[in-house]
Length: 248
Image (tube, rainbow, N blue to C red; front, side, top):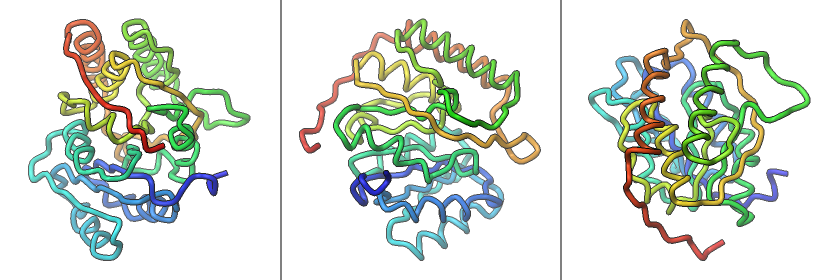
Protein backbone atom coordinates (compact mmCIF):
# COMPACT_ATOMS: atom_id res chain seq x y z
CA UNK A 1 0.00 0.00 0.00
CA UNK A 2 2.84 2.41 0.79
CA UNK A 3 4.18 1.92 -2.74
CA UNK A 4 1.16 3.83 -4.10
CA UNK A 5 2.36 7.06 -2.44
CA UNK A 6 4.83 9.06 -4.60
CA UNK A 7 8.44 9.29 -3.48
CA UNK A 8 9.96 12.33 -1.76
CA UNK A 9 6.77 14.30 -1.12
CA UNK A 10 6.93 14.50 2.68
CA UNK A 11 8.69 16.84 5.10
CA UNK A 12 9.10 15.28 8.55
CA UNK A 13 9.48 17.84 11.35
CA UNK A 14 11.11 16.35 14.46
CA UNK A 15 11.08 18.47 17.65
CA UNK A 16 13.78 17.23 20.05
CA UNK A 17 14.67 17.74 23.68
CA UNK A 18 17.17 15.35 25.32
CA UNK A 19 16.46 12.42 22.99
CA UNK A 20 19.94 10.92 22.64
CA UNK A 21 18.68 7.44 23.55
CA UNK A 22 16.15 7.10 20.72
CA UNK A 23 16.98 9.70 18.05
CA UNK A 24 19.23 7.54 15.87
CA UNK A 25 16.71 4.69 15.77
CA UNK A 26 13.85 7.04 14.92
CA UNK A 27 15.84 8.68 12.11
CA UNK A 28 16.74 5.28 10.70
CA UNK A 29 13.06 4.35 10.54
CA UNK A 30 12.11 7.71 8.99
CA UNK A 31 14.73 7.76 6.25
CA UNK A 32 13.92 4.30 4.85
CA UNK A 33 10.44 5.57 3.93
CA UNK A 34 10.57 6.41 0.23
CA UNK A 35 8.00 9.20 0.50
CA UNK A 36 10.28 11.20 2.85
CA UNK A 37 11.88 14.09 0.96
CA UNK A 38 13.41 15.83 3.95
CA UNK A 39 13.73 15.61 7.72
CA UNK A 40 13.85 18.88 9.65
CA UNK A 41 15.43 18.28 13.06
CA UNK A 42 14.82 21.05 15.61
CA UNK A 43 16.79 20.71 18.83
CA UNK A 44 15.10 22.71 21.58
CA UNK A 45 18.05 23.41 23.87
CA UNK A 46 18.99 19.83 24.76
CA UNK A 47 21.61 19.31 27.45
CA UNK A 48 22.62 15.80 26.30
CA UNK A 49 24.12 14.55 23.00
CA UNK A 50 20.98 15.12 20.92
CA UNK A 51 22.51 17.99 18.93
CA UNK A 52 25.72 16.08 18.18
CA UNK A 53 23.76 13.07 16.93
CA UNK A 54 21.56 15.30 14.77
CA UNK A 55 24.57 17.04 13.19
CA UNK A 56 26.11 13.69 12.30
CA UNK A 57 22.94 12.60 10.50
CA UNK A 58 22.83 15.95 8.69
CA UNK A 59 26.37 15.31 7.44
CA UNK A 60 25.55 11.76 6.35
CA UNK A 61 22.22 12.26 4.52
CA UNK A 62 21.32 15.13 2.18
CA UNK A 63 17.67 14.93 3.23
CA UNK A 64 18.41 15.84 6.86
CA UNK A 65 18.56 19.46 8.03
CA UNK A 66 19.39 20.48 11.58
CA UNK A 67 18.26 23.63 13.41
CA UNK A 68 19.13 24.43 17.02
CA UNK A 69 17.43 26.49 19.69
CA UNK A 70 20.14 27.34 22.20
CA UNK A 71 17.53 27.93 24.93
CA UNK A 72 14.67 25.51 25.64
CA UNK A 73 11.40 27.09 24.51
CA UNK A 74 8.97 24.17 24.23
CA UNK A 75 7.54 21.78 21.64
CA UNK A 76 5.29 24.38 20.03
CA UNK A 77 8.25 26.70 19.48
CA UNK A 78 10.29 23.88 17.93
CA UNK A 79 7.44 22.97 15.61
CA UNK A 80 6.95 26.60 14.58
CA UNK A 81 10.60 26.74 13.56
CA UNK A 82 10.41 23.43 11.70
CA UNK A 83 7.19 24.15 9.82
CA UNK A 84 8.58 27.39 8.41
CA UNK A 85 11.58 25.48 7.00
CA UNK A 86 9.56 22.68 5.34
CA UNK A 87 9.76 22.47 1.55
CA UNK A 88 7.88 19.30 0.51
CA UNK A 89 4.16 19.29 -0.47
CA UNK A 90 3.11 17.60 2.79
CA UNK A 91 4.36 18.04 6.35
CA UNK A 92 4.07 15.60 9.27
CA UNK A 93 5.12 15.79 12.93
CA UNK A 94 7.28 12.96 14.29
CA UNK A 95 8.36 12.96 17.93
CA UNK A 96 11.95 11.89 18.54
CA UNK A 97 10.96 8.93 20.69
CA UNK A 98 9.55 5.55 19.65
CA UNK A 99 5.87 6.05 20.52
CA UNK A 100 4.80 6.33 16.85
CA UNK A 101 6.05 4.19 13.98
CA UNK A 102 7.21 5.95 10.76
CA UNK A 103 6.31 2.79 8.84
CA UNK A 104 2.72 4.07 9.12
CA UNK A 105 3.40 7.40 7.40
CA UNK A 106 1.62 6.08 4.32
CA UNK A 107 -1.66 5.76 6.23
CA UNK A 108 -1.58 9.44 7.19
CA UNK A 109 -0.19 10.79 3.92
CA UNK A 110 -2.33 8.84 1.44
CA UNK A 111 -5.56 10.89 1.83
CA UNK A 112 -3.54 14.05 1.20
CA UNK A 113 -1.70 12.67 -1.81
CA UNK A 114 -5.03 11.43 -3.23
CA UNK A 115 -6.54 14.90 -2.92
CA UNK A 116 -9.19 13.82 -0.39
CA UNK A 117 -8.01 15.91 2.57
CA UNK A 118 -6.11 19.02 3.61
CA UNK A 119 -5.18 17.62 7.03
CA UNK A 120 -5.03 14.07 8.39
CA UNK A 121 -4.86 13.02 12.05
CA UNK A 122 -3.42 9.64 12.96
CA UNK A 123 -5.70 8.46 15.77
CA UNK A 124 -4.62 6.12 18.56
CA UNK A 125 -8.25 5.39 19.41
CA UNK A 126 -9.89 4.38 16.16
CA UNK A 127 -10.84 0.71 16.19
CA UNK A 128 -8.12 -1.77 15.26
CA UNK A 129 -8.02 -5.57 15.42
CA UNK A 130 -5.37 -5.47 18.15
CA UNK A 131 -3.97 -2.67 20.29
CA UNK A 132 -1.48 -1.93 23.03
CA UNK A 133 -3.21 -1.56 26.40
CA UNK A 134 -2.71 2.06 27.50
CA UNK A 135 -2.64 3.71 30.93
CA UNK A 136 -6.21 4.42 32.04
CA UNK A 137 -5.92 7.94 33.43
CA UNK A 138 -3.61 9.14 30.65
CA UNK A 139 -6.14 7.84 28.11
CA UNK A 140 -9.09 9.39 29.95
CA UNK A 141 -7.26 12.71 30.12
CA UNK A 142 -6.63 12.67 26.38
CA UNK A 143 -10.24 11.75 25.67
CA UNK A 144 -11.55 14.49 27.95
CA UNK A 145 -9.40 17.09 26.18
CA UNK A 146 -10.53 15.73 22.81
CA UNK A 147 -14.19 15.93 23.87
CA UNK A 148 -13.80 19.50 25.13
CA UNK A 149 -11.99 20.48 21.93
CA UNK A 150 -14.69 18.87 19.79
CA UNK A 151 -17.45 20.69 21.68
CA UNK A 152 -15.82 24.06 21.06
CA UNK A 153 -14.42 23.53 17.55
CA UNK A 154 -17.37 21.50 16.16
CA UNK A 155 -14.90 19.00 14.73
CA UNK A 156 -15.50 15.36 15.67
CA UNK A 157 -12.01 13.90 15.94
CA UNK A 158 -11.20 10.92 18.16
CA UNK A 159 -7.65 11.96 19.13
CA UNK A 160 -6.96 15.70 19.23
CA UNK A 161 -3.71 15.15 21.17
CA UNK A 162 -2.12 12.78 18.64
CA UNK A 163 1.42 13.47 17.48
CA UNK A 164 0.70 12.30 13.93
CA UNK A 165 -0.83 15.32 12.27
CA UNK A 166 -0.08 15.70 8.56
CA UNK A 167 -0.81 18.87 6.60
CA UNK A 168 -0.57 20.34 3.17
CA UNK A 169 2.47 22.54 3.48
CA UNK A 170 0.60 25.71 2.54
CA UNK A 171 -1.95 25.00 5.30
CA UNK A 172 0.45 24.64 8.21
CA UNK A 173 2.64 27.50 7.00
CA UNK A 174 -0.43 29.76 6.96
CA UNK A 175 -1.22 29.07 10.61
CA UNK A 176 0.54 31.31 13.16
CA UNK A 177 1.60 28.96 15.97
CA UNK A 178 1.53 30.99 19.17
CA UNK A 179 1.78 28.50 22.04
CA UNK A 180 5.35 27.48 22.82
CA UNK A 181 4.65 24.26 24.72
CA UNK A 182 2.21 21.35 24.40
CA UNK A 183 -0.69 23.71 23.72
CA UNK A 184 0.16 23.28 20.05
CA UNK A 185 -2.32 20.39 19.68
CA UNK A 186 -5.52 22.22 20.77
CA UNK A 187 -4.32 25.45 19.17
CA UNK A 188 -3.78 24.00 15.72
CA UNK A 189 -7.01 21.98 15.93
CA UNK A 190 -9.01 25.12 16.75
CA UNK A 191 -7.41 27.08 13.93
CA UNK A 192 -7.94 24.26 11.41
CA UNK A 193 -11.62 24.20 12.36
CA UNK A 194 -11.95 27.94 11.75
CA UNK A 195 -10.33 27.52 8.33
CA UNK A 196 -13.05 24.97 7.42
CA UNK A 197 -10.56 22.49 6.03
CA UNK A 198 -11.13 18.91 4.94
CA UNK A 199 -9.93 16.92 7.94
CA UNK A 200 -9.66 13.12 7.96
CA UNK A 201 -8.51 10.54 10.50
CA UNK A 202 -6.85 7.16 10.20
CA UNK A 203 -5.87 4.62 12.84
CA UNK A 204 -2.20 4.42 13.86
CA UNK A 205 -0.26 2.32 16.33
CA UNK A 206 0.98 3.76 19.61
CA UNK A 207 3.68 2.47 21.95
CA UNK A 208 3.68 4.77 25.00
CA UNK A 209 6.81 5.40 27.02
CA UNK A 210 6.82 6.07 30.75
CA UNK A 211 8.03 9.18 32.57
CA UNK A 212 11.04 7.12 33.65
CA UNK A 213 11.81 6.56 29.96
CA UNK A 214 11.63 10.28 29.24
CA UNK A 215 7.99 11.23 28.69
CA UNK A 216 7.73 14.98 29.31
CA UNK A 217 4.06 15.98 29.25
CA UNK A 218 2.44 16.27 32.68
CA UNK A 219 -0.64 17.37 34.64
CA UNK A 220 0.20 21.07 34.28
CA UNK A 221 0.22 20.63 30.51
CA UNK A 222 -3.29 19.19 30.74
CA UNK A 223 -4.57 22.33 32.46
CA UNK A 224 -2.69 24.41 29.90
CA UNK A 225 -4.45 22.46 27.13
CA UNK A 226 -7.85 23.33 28.63
CA UNK A 227 -6.92 27.02 28.60
CA UNK A 228 -5.70 26.73 24.99
CA UNK A 229 -8.96 25.05 23.92
CA UNK A 230 -10.94 27.96 25.36
CA UNK A 231 -8.55 30.63 24.12
CA UNK A 232 -8.18 29.54 20.50
CA UNK A 233 -11.78 28.38 19.97
CA UNK A 234 -13.67 31.12 21.83
CA UNK A 235 -11.48 34.10 22.69
CA UNK A 236 -9.36 34.29 19.54
CA UNK A 237 -11.37 35.89 16.75
CA UNK A 238 -8.52 36.02 14.22
CA UNK A 239 -9.04 34.95 10.62
CA UNK A 240 -6.49 32.78 8.81
CA UNK A 241 -6.30 33.00 5.04
CA UNK A 242 -4.68 30.38 2.85
CA UNK A 243 -4.68 29.26 -0.78
CA UNK A 244 -5.25 25.60 -1.64
CA UNK A 245 -2.58 24.32 -3.98
CA UNK A 246 -3.72 23.33 -7.45
CA UNK A 247 -0.82 20.88 -7.82
CA UNK A 248 -2.48 17.66 -6.63
